[in-house]
Length: 298
Image (tube, rainbow, N blue to C red; front, side, top):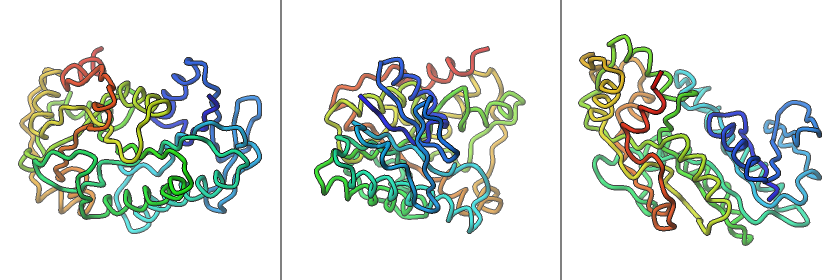
């Protein structure tokens, strides 16, 4: 297929474009600089809502991963606006452009996040679970709503609600590795909050799976085995052979990081991959310890 990818330089995007290319798909990348025709690049400008529309003719499917890094800095008012607008406006630009093509693509697979569910304790959350409250839940709601227009016009739309992606190359695990190696790791708050995670290789394979399978609507992109923060901390410490006694009280986190602490570190989201399992997707790394060992080995 001819597949258009936004966010192709990101953690998931870089590996996904490599896999799609290896599978003989023709990959086109959306870039914000001047595009190079030799490398299948297509220029877009989200702020001005401009894109090289003529180059999108003939595209079979779109994978949309673009968005400001949620964990890239303290949540000031301006950063919150950037997190929201980067997702909503990029999706809006893509969707309105696709509808003006002579032959729109058959599938639109967009990133979303399990932040949609907010804090729901130990409740198992499949894709039909209700939306939660808070900033991230509202971001996900608006983000997913933008692609609904494509569904109204008969296109297959998939909203991949991504959990915590475990990878050697970056993301949360790369940030946690050093403090844990120094023996400074510990539970956050009471440690009972659930963390829904997925191995990077399973995440990449699931996006490729969504291109050709009959997935539609929200899809929880998480391992079948969510764990509590206490379990995650204990397992990570065991893999690194380091103590994990430096707990961080919830009050300290809330004082330092405010909304960011409540929604990213103290929220409990126990999501399960209902659609993926129902459609026969086989996880290669469903077990947390196996995933951590492969990414943290020397």
